[in-house]
Length: 90
Image (cartoon, rainbow, N blue to C red; front, side):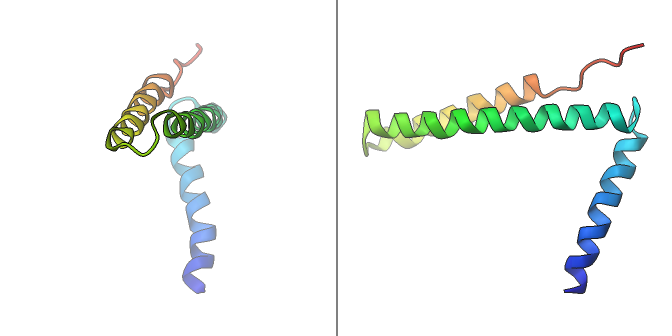
């Protein structure tokens, strides 16, 4: 129980201190975090809807698993491209 409570306190403190040290300050970094979180929610929704549609369209074929895995890889690449830090405004 003590470890859980320690984690509840220590993890946010470490995250805030690390984000504060990065260029642009804490506010800029939190904007990037929230932007990435929204992106993950959108891409996660696309994955759930897409995998459901693929299961309905292709049924229980062995290729279905590969197509769903391919969808996951494509969405991961989209996240890597769109989730990059925005340039600092000077």
